[in-house]
Image 1 (tube, rainbow, N blue to C red):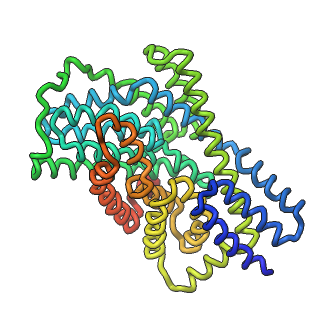
Image 2 (image 1 turned 90 degrees about the vertical axis):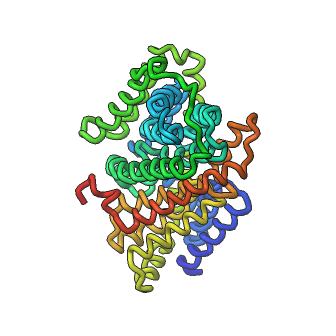
Image 3 (image 1 turned 180 degrees about the vertical axis):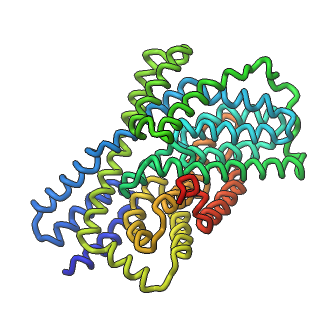
Length: 433
């Protein structure tokens, strides 16, 4: 059997395995092993192929950025700095109709500059922001929708775990992707703020001005300094070239722990719990990366990426049309798969095509991340929606209510995605490309 045919059959087998519930990493690695065995006819060679791919995938220095940024994000979440950020911003916007929703978006944007994980943002602000918005008279569907919608900023505004994963999959500069994420992240943040301001003006029945929010004196401005200072330390260090993204993760994690202990927000038990959670998340990501590395090498060995690239080029489709079709595919996959799994399956196939078409890697990376993030808000999977609902179950919040409230934000994300496809400078402008 021809290697190219074995490669295409492997793709079909992986798709079936994932849809029937096999863990993504197991599906990728297992089918790839049998694919290489079928191509070479030697099981020992196939086993060595898999072992080498697995070792190389996590032995790279760049991979160290994953546990470090995860540790920093979990530490910040544990210390309650997200709660402080929301309290400070909310008290300054209490006379703005819809201001608590705007405060939630801005707080998520600031929090995203440290955590890099959307699910963490959804969990934190479900507990912090939703009760305050409901108490102030905001319609419950709007309150939960704001939290679910703005939580996606955690994967778009750098540092972002998905951008790191994309960098590993494509051997791209993490720093360049982080810089590229600033434009789309700010655009989406301001689009959310514009929508909430519009809603507050034309639908005042959905909001009432909060009458008993804490005053500015009760929530001092300096409460936000630790989180802003930490974000500034990490990001300025990367952008000004003082340290690499991996070194920035180490500095940020150390600084977050120092802040937590200095403010007496965490103790030895909390530190141990954070370390264990960091290990769990890192192990899960590591397992996925190993599976993706084996899968991408098997594809290259079979010649499938080159074949698909040639088909795409011969079809006459242009870069813009390809990016729109690819983004649509990612959004569809987002209804049944999580963000990381989608990237692991699709990026190794699509990346060579974009390179042949002359698409900037940073531009492609941001389109990919934004498209898969829409899946966090769409049924039936919608991980951010499930996190918000599970965090607010005691208030009687239903999944349908959260999906309904998040729908306008998903549409805003889709509009931002289209703008990003047609205007690459949104992602590449700060890089001077």
